[in-house]
Image (cartoon, rainbow, N blue to C red; front, side, top):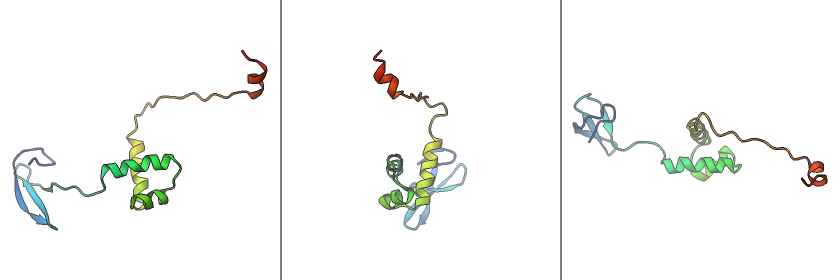
Length: 104
């Protein structure tokens, strides 16, 4: 097992915490667990399409069984992960009168 902080392969078992095995890195002497806390990534990714479809934060939180502030944090993190130079789209306005009177 590799340490999470220094990526050294030498770690030893170092007790349990709430039934989860803990390990200690021999190189940096930090203690870590294999299991990570938090929600599943697939659950977090479900929040973006729901928000884009017009659902509110509280409704998304209710559907995903999470607090609405947590949903808000997921959406902010997803927005920050977008590329800086996103493709630009041009807005086009169509003149109704010109369209129907001038077929060219």
